[in-house]
Amino acid sequence: MVAGSSLSFFDLLMFSIIIISVLYASRFIAGEKTQKTLQLLVSRPVKRWKIIIGKYISFIVLFIPLLVGSVILMAIWIDIIDIGRSGWDVFFSYVAATMIYSFVYSSIATLFSTISKNTTTAALGSFIFLVGWVIIDFLTIYMPEETAEIIEHVSLAHHANEILGYISNGEAAIFAAGGIPADPGTQGFLYSLIVIITLIILPILLAVLVFNRMEIN
Image 1: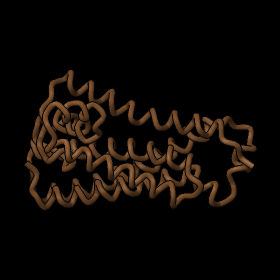
Image 2: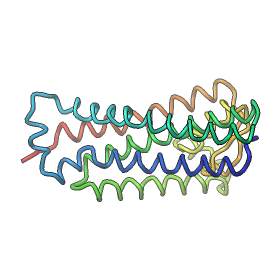
Image 3: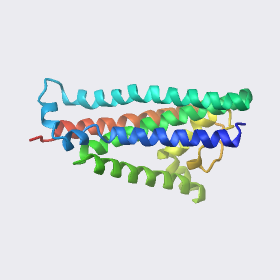
Image 4: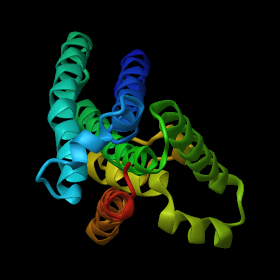
């Protein structure tokens, strides 16, 4: 297992990257409204759906170097303490978890950015929604088993934890899932992967739908 100090350091990196992702995505459309440049943006001969998709892709282009830089810093740190092969499995599973949370959260923030009047409202709405989601995820640990199993189908923490557990061979777990490691088979892993992809795509599609119907004066 990875030493506690290195995990704490990586938890901080994960949290920072996720926060940056949400703040960045909250500016996609709401930022244009705040700066009074949205009308100019849509007046260009570019379809509106391409604007949303283009902004999300630009986020990924920004996010990848940020994640790579953080991974390099963390790799240097854990190389010093010599975590061994199993520790590296845990390490890369947390990298995957960071990507999952950042991509899903930024997708939801994109939707909030589209329906909000300014960046502050978009960011605040995104954080309130996402914090509430995390709280519900965490509370499933204390719910009756039947209720928890129903909620787990739409639980980001549950599916992220399934993927985390699959990559790390049941060695790693995220806090929102109670810190309880999962060790799913391939079928469980693929199901969770499909759910995560859906959670990324669906808010973007809704944002496109709203933006296409938006009256901009």
